[in-house]
Image (cartoon, rainbow, N blue to C red; front, side):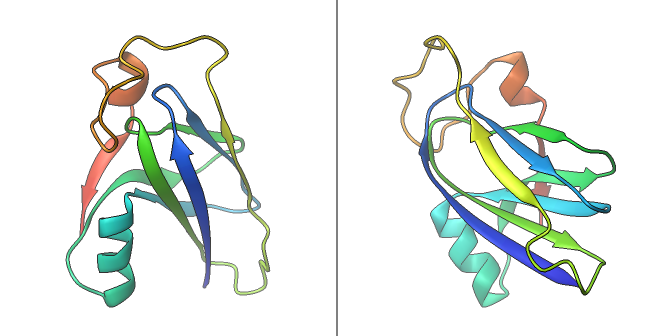
Length: 116
């Protein structure tokens, strides 16, 4: 099993996480507090899911600082997943929203919240 972590930094509403997968993968999108809890092995809340196809596109839950954790079954996938964030081309309504608060847009609602 391979686990790849990316600090996505601060993102705006409407940003989309895009992954190019070599194999099936589990993807977690976490804010900094939940990423710390994930690293400690205690209960955390995340967005994401199971990726079966490439490219996999997941809208970030809202404005704020985010981390992505990708887990694959392939033990030899060094850094096989290309992970990038696509920013919106135009300002998205509500872009001034407080970090970590999900936007009430169809794109943001497409991410499925996960609980550990």
